[in-house]
Amino acid sequence: MSNQPLSDEEFCSIRTQLHELQVEHRDLDLVIVHLIENPPPDDLLIRRLKKRKLALKDRIILLEGMLVPDIPA
Image (tube, rainbow, N blue to C red):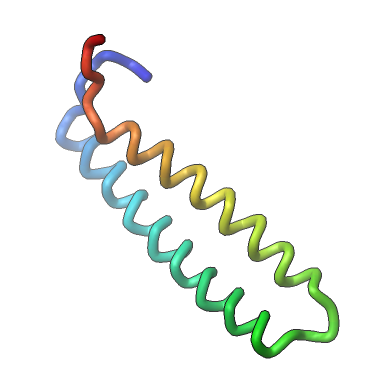
């Protein structure tokens, strides 16, 4: 992470990306639960959705970290 503070534009852009990823993550969670309760003929779709959900979670954590200012130790 850079020690440079974020500009207002960068901050807003990250917040927007973060919100979009959180919405997609929540939606995927609902789809996964539905597919687990009503399984398709094979579970490849569920595995792919879970993988995408984990990737989204990693990106969300990264963006959240960018929004928190660095605190000197």
